[in-house]
Every structure is written in C-alpha cells, then in structure tokens.
Length: 482
Image 1 (cartoon, rainbow, N blue to C red):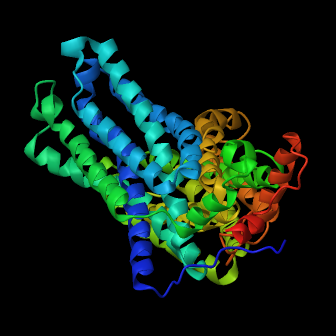
Image 2 (image 1 turned 180 degrees about the horizontal axis):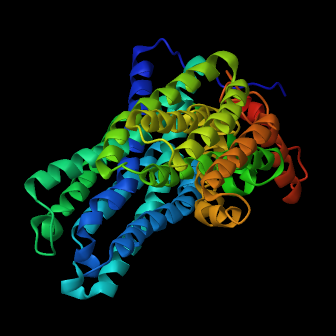
C-alpha cells in the first residue's frame, strides 16, 4: 500500500489563523496562571502563617513557606503522568480546561480554609498542605496539555519563537503575585494574628487566582479547538492496537523511550540551574554586607529584563537549529553563571548596581535553554504521545535537582561553600550539552510526521505481541483507507 499522510491545513485561511491565535493565547495565559498559583503561597502566606500555625519563629515561617511550595512541586510530576495520558487520549483542549478549572477551584478552597483557632494547628496545616499537593497535580497537567496543542498549531518556521513566548509567561506569574500582594496589603495591613491581613486579607490573592483560572479555562473550553495534527493522528490510529494502548507504555519503549531519556536528562540539567537561581541566588545576595531586603526587592524589579533571553534563543533556534542554539546556551551557562554567583557569594562586592548586573546575568543564562526546549522536546515525540513525553519529562526532571541544598552541603566538605552553587550549575550545563549531542536536529519538522519511525516500531511490536498474524498497518495505510 502506498504511504501517505493527511494534507496540512490551509494556513492562509482566516478561520485557521484565528484558531491558531486563540490556541497560543490560551497556552500563554494558562502557563501564566499556573506560575501565579505555584508561587502565591510562598509570598502571600508568609505574613499570615500565624493564622495556620500560631506563634512561629522566623526560621519556622521560612520552613513552612518552603513546604507549601515543595508539596506543590511534588504534585506536578504526578499531574504530568495522569493528564499527559488524557491529553494524548481524549484531547489537549479538554484536558487543559479540566486542569485549569481544577487548580482554580483548589485556590478557592485554600481561600476558605479555617485557621488554628478554628480547627487546631495540626488540622489547619494538614489541610493547607494537602490542598497544595492536589493543586500541584492539576498544575502539572496544565502545561502537559496546552503547550503541545499550541505548538501543533504554530508555523514550523516560528515554532521555537512561539514556544519561547509561551514559556516566558512563567516569569509573569511571580510579577502578578507581587502586584496582588501589594494591593492586598494596601487595603488589609499585616500585623499580629488579629490584623486584617492575617484574618482575611491573605485570602484575596487566592480568590483572584480562582477568578483568573476560571476565565482562562472557560476561554480554552469554549473558544479553542484541538489541533488538526492531533485530530488526524487520532483518526489514523483508530482501529489499530495503538488506540488501545497507554501513551505511557509507548513513551518508555524503543526509539520513543530513548527520546524520552534524552529530554529528561536535558530538563534535569535545566532544573539544576533553575533551582539555584530560584533560591540560592537570593540567599547569596542577602549575604553581602549592607545589602538589604529593599535592595533585593529593587533587584527583582530589574531581573525580568532577562525574559528577553527566552525570546531571543527561541527565535535563534528557528534560524540556526535547536541543537546549535542549545550548544550555545550550555557553555554560556557553564562559564557565566559560576563566575557571577561566586562573585555574588564572596561578600566582596557591595555596590547594588554591580550585584544586580551579576544577578541579571545569572537569570539570562538560566532561561536561555528554556526558550528552545518547548519546541525541541515536543518535536521529539509522535503526536500520540507528545503530551506524555513533554509533561513527564518536564515534571519528573525536577526531582533530582530539588535536593540541591543537600548537594551543596556535601560539596562544601571539599570546596568553599560559595563555590558549590557554581559547581552544580556546571553539572547542569554539562547534562544539557551531552544530552543535546545525543539527539537529532528537529527544526522545521512536520509535527504530523514526528516520531513516525518510533510509531511504526511500537505498532509492529504490539501487533506481534497480540499474535494477530497480519501485517501491522502503518499510519499511511490508515490515511489511505479513509
């Protein structure tokens, strides 16, 4: 039988272009609200922790705030596993809407939580951490569905840029949190347990998160359609053994399994750098004599200029290739970051401008590979497992790097502590470089054909296992049959 594949949609059609814009917008907004929901607890709850736990030391508050973030991040890999399956099976639009509705409702439930005075400290804290874990599961499902859908709509020659624009919305989340918290403190001042902020003010940013989530989910459910790429793929596997298989099974086998390992190693390297930037960088800044909390706040107002790095490297990957772009970002990170963060942690620089410039440099090289990876990783997987591949690789890769503080303590036994963060960054950059070298170039690939060889391999294996006795159909056969 002749092999074929469904014709591409007419990209000049105004209706298709409108659908594409809505899909990309919904992915950007969904990831922004996702990021808002992740970071809201660490900032908004900090002045109100006495509501849940009673009197706490400053150290205890920091630990508790860290726990609210940690349990959320622990839920994300599970969300990628669960909702990646459904995004590949029933559709990315429906799955994306369910996940956004899900973490929006959880945000509202958090806003309604009783405190230690009502149900006791143990129950109050348990309920908060449980809801944050559940929220993390839904958050892990959001990017699993929305980003692949948007990239399936994107023009091949702009897929890197569009992936970068979606990814940079993660930086908008903390900004929205800061704005929401500042406005809340204006109308509900913080203080002791009886202050307006502790009693009710902290709830308002969570309600805002609920409203934003519902609006984005409604838009996704009512105004966005699944991509033609996924619709055709579902038709092609209809009636084959693949239609009955779990996407996760295919993801972990053969060529697709090797693609997954490569993507997972790259993301593990990325998260080593991201975690250092998200935590250690601020700690090192505050270690400098004369550097105050106000200085840190002012530095954080400047740092968002690094968002341009997402866009630049995503754009660059559309012109020179994904691998070449990553080959630039990895050595750049390995050289610039260790020097910058070691200087910051040395307590020898006391000029705010210089410290801020070094911090911005760290952020620029941190997000540079993230401008390339949404397109690159999604291009590595066949449509029938794309959400699972992207979501599981992205979600589970955070686990090993999340113990960075322990690695720094161990390394400090052989090198000065201020050097340990730089060493972990070099390890992360090396993982990115080596794993990238082990994979193919994917720039410009037709996503309808991505992973075609892996698809055939899996189809042949599963057909043989079922002992059907007949030659397994190819995706081209399925198209011809229609």
